[in-house]
Amino acid sequence: MTSKPTTPPPESRLQAEVVTVLQLYRFFPLMIPNGEVRNLTPQKYQRLVAQGFRKGAPDILVFDLQNPHLHPLHLELKTDKGRLSSAQKNWATFCEKHGMIYRVARSAEEAVQIAKDWRESHGRENKTGKALKI
Image 1 (tube, helix red, strand yellow):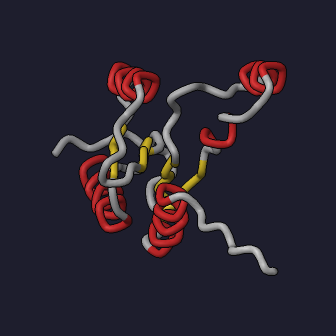
Image 2 (tube, rainbow, N blue to C red; image 1 turned 120 degrees about the vertical axis):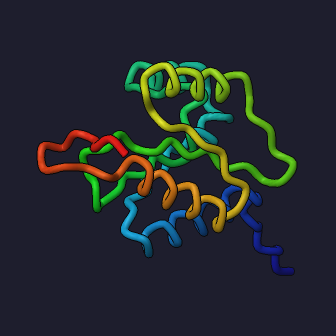
């Protein structure tokens, strides 16, 4: 008897697709494995916290290879029915308070559009690395 292959959860499939597509547009997506902490022992969880793990951090930090001096885009991925947790809402508030961009995408197409809009609106830079006024 053969076992049926397990299918990754929908959000995991979305994340893999987003990473692949963003790279085509010269973005450097860095995945933060937040979902991997759900089944850890309290000791392992505390060790990760001591090493810098933060509850509510986005699924992906997106760096723009064309404008590497920009703060990364904080990109949270959700399925159609997915909702932000209170920790994720707190992270979004933290980003806003500190001048960082936080967005939620529900498809690879939406994620790419968010990243392209972010690049366009925040990527007009001069040679000193300071944003030009538009």
